[in-house]
Length: 201
Image 1 (tube, rainbow, N blue to C red):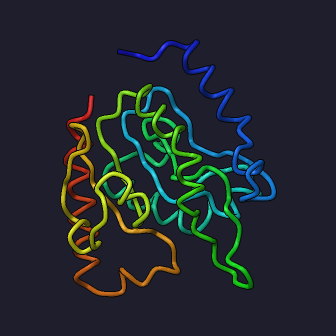
Image 2 (image 1 turned 30 degrees about the vertical axis):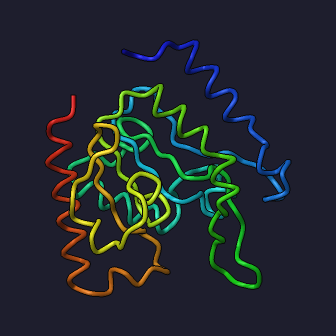
C-alpha cells in the first residue's frame, strides 16, 4: 500500500540529519545523500557517494554516475528517471573519503555498512519496489551473498520476491569491463532490466 506522507516525512527528516558515522569517527563530516522518491518502484543501490557527490550535494553526478545513467537509458528509462521512478541509494550514504595517499575512494568498512544499513531496511519497507539493481560487488553481495561477478552479471535473481538484476561498478577504475565476454554480460543485464522495466506498474 502507498506510504503515508507522515511516515515518509519522518523518515526523510531523520535521514537528512543523520550524523552516526561522523560521531563514530569514520568520517570527518556527514552529508547523507540519496536520490529520494517515495513513488519510485525501482531501487538502484551502489557502494557510497563519491567526492563529487559530497562536494556538490548531488548523487551519481560524477563520471561513474554518468556512465551508470547511460546504462539505464539503454534499458529504456528516461534520462530523468533517477530520483523519480528510480530510487538512488547506496550501502553507506556519506562520502567515505579517499584511500590514504591515493586519489581513489575508500570502500566503506563492514562497521560503517552495518551502522548505515537501517536506512536501506526502512526504505525497502516503505517503498513499493518491483526491481532492485545493485551495481558493484559490495551492493550485489548485500542482496545475493558472495560470488563472482561472472556468475552474476547478465542473470536475474530474486530477493524476497523482488527481481534483482546486478550490474558491474561503473567506475573507470574498474577493469572488469575490459574483456568482451564481460561487456556481453553487461549487455545481457541491460536487456534483462529493459524487459522487466516494460512490465512495471
